[in-house]
Amino acid sequence: MTMNRSVIFAIGALVLALAAAACSSSPAAEPGAADPTAAPTAMETPTQVTLVATPEPTPDTGTDPVSETALTLTSQDVLAIVGDSVALTVEQLQPQAIDSSEAPVPVDAIDEWVITLFQAPETGAAIVFSVMDLATVKDAETVFAEVQIGFTGQTVSVGLGDDSVAFEPNASGIGSIITFIQGDLVVSMTATLPPNGEPLTDLAGLTSLGRTASDRLGGESSAGAQAVLDEVLALWAATSASEYTFEFNWVCFCIREWVSPVSLSVSGGEVVSAMFVESGEPVTDANQLASYVTIEGLFQLLQDAIDQSAESIQVEFHPTDGYPVSAFIDYDARMADEERGFSAANLSLAN
Image (cartoon, rainbow, N blue to C red; front, top):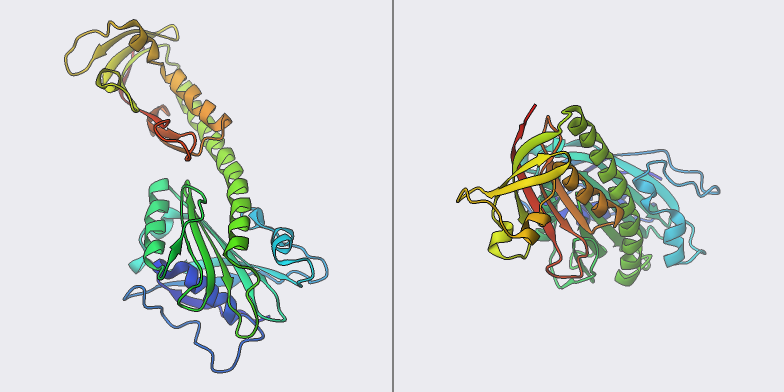
């Protein structure tokens, strides 16, 4: 199978271009078909990406690409949707060069980008699966917003990840498309329309595959969050802090007094006093005072969120001392007003 190695697309039309790249690799492509390297019209100046394909797996082994991200979906997952009578080849594509002149985020904000092509060689029909791992949740949200711009026609809600967009049919003639954001990941799936024949699946089939990917990526996100937490815990342990003060406030759907910034004094692993920053008055309400936690307590709050597989954990840590300076946790995207966050600043160590 031959692969067109240069695909030009605007970030706003990301999924469309990936699908076009898949179609261009088909041996069933007709002479005179649209040039897959032609720039789409979603943005005036396109972004250029070079896709480098790994060696094609041996057809009779069914071996999938070795990338852990690519293995979020396997040929077995796809065959369970399209039928096990379909002969599939699996190819992993790695974007190697990106022209950042029109990219919505800096190129170095993309930690990893893996694209997997599941294709039926006889018809050229394919499913394109793309996972873009961004440096921060904000970067992922920016890319997702640009992808949304590239969608035309009637969008469909499929309820995947933190937010999603999908449509079928596609006015550009590419096929069913789903894109969703999950933490700092932007995930896209496309069922391409071959020159002759039917797509491998419809929007319902893609949605089912999307749920499988979302569940597995959620597990990977938890593992990644745990690794980060362990790393910053080591930084905090290095401070040997036993007595300290810091400014703190909850971020929640609470009464004003409970979210007002306070200065907390910690000794012996407990909050011994709290004072409102604005007025300088002490916190006298026993229940309110009991709601405040130490830096160690904030780490435990984050650990509990990971253990409970919270839908979204957004947190920033102090670069040298390691303590969390801000966090926002959404435990269940289906529930309202259960989100919880906090801010911490101006740490002062007594020793």
